[in-house]
Length: 91
Image (cartoon, helix red, strand yellow):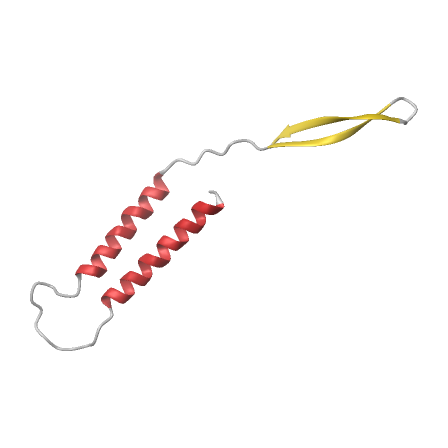
């Protein structure tokens, strides 16, 4: 997972937790419930977080091989450096 995806996922999780805690925190009063007031924002934030999180987690991540190239000295049979050449490896 790339760094930008990790940052985006962490930001979405933090936003979901913050929205859920703000939406469900309120004064503790004994009053009758009419049409479930107070659950809308909390449930909506939780649902949005679950949908976005599952969409990000379900996307396939393809790891491409990384090509690393270095310069290697070329030597003759006497140990003298006669030049360099580029050698690449895939990791």
